[in-house]
Image (tube, rainbow, N blue to C red; front, top):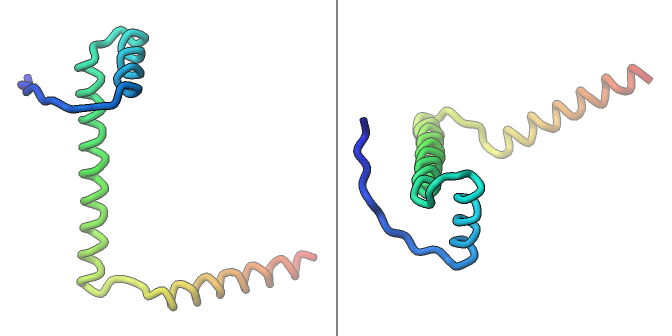
Length: 89
């Protein structure tokens, strides 16, 4: 079983009222809701930072396309699609 530790945070009155209303509606404590919110935030941000690190590593290894290369690729795709649509007509 995981042990928990108390933390403190300041929120504006509107957020606090909304939190209390949500806690009552869900029959959960304010503390439980805050713990869930913090847990989800930390997970999401940690995953995002890992995603960024993967991209940075790819750039360091030269595994990327320049903006010019991507623009040329997109233009090529658009041209090919336009050609297919003309043949259908």
